[in-house]
Image (cartoon, rainbow, N blue to C red; front, side, top):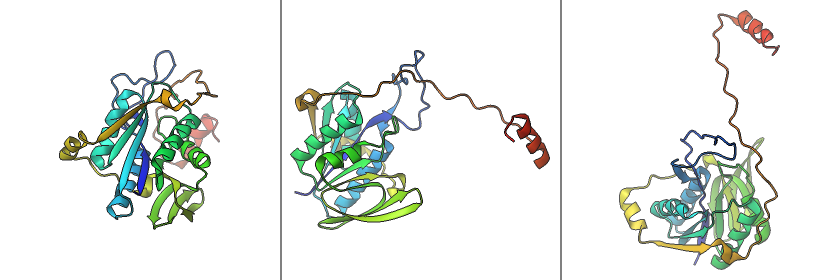
Amino acid sequence: MKNVLVGLKRVIDYNVRVRVKNDGSGVETEGVKMSINPFDEIALEEALRIKEKGLINEIIVISIGPSESQQQLRTGLAMGADKAILIETSADLDPLTISKIFYNIVERENPLLVLLGKQGIDNDNNQTGQMLATLWGRPQATFASKIELNEKKATVVREIDLGLETIEIDLPAVITTDLRLNEPRYVKLPDIMKAKNKSLEIIPFTDFKIEVKNTLKNINIEPPEKRQKGIMVNDSQELINALKEKGLL
């Protein structure tokens, strides 16, 4: 059976205004709306479109995080994924550890393709897809804005600093998705009800026997400085004078 593995990360909803904790130890999540990482949602939408073309048979969504991540997996199932896997842990894992977990699932499920968002909007690491491809020993295509598959290869248009680049890679492979790839579909109530009957497997993180070695430590988190109030000027000369007063010219 040809299947696609899609990663779904639980993050603070992108419409929510993030607040830093008073002690500077992190951002406030208590009572805050959580959603699927937007880049991951795009990855799932692309997997659904690939399945609708008859190129794959099954979509498996996977999340690594606390028990509450079941909510995001159920949303993925409601969108159209066939089954879900939660690697349950309350630990804050680094990208390499997450990549090792994904690799264990890849070995078990033997997917044709792994689709991941290019980065999470919480830490913006942009590392997991690249690390997974290295561990798996398979090709990768990052920042995809267009994907076309055939039996053995994928043609990917990817966004780079100077524009767009088109590459062809052998399958199986890892592809990370960018914003312009697609627009995810809305979840309908009947699909939410159907998703309750789909398979959601929960695996404790400790089952993987992976040693956690976080090499980075957050010392302090603080919000950005408040923007200064703008002023109105009547003409270009007044603008130049104002910039000179601020030492910007």
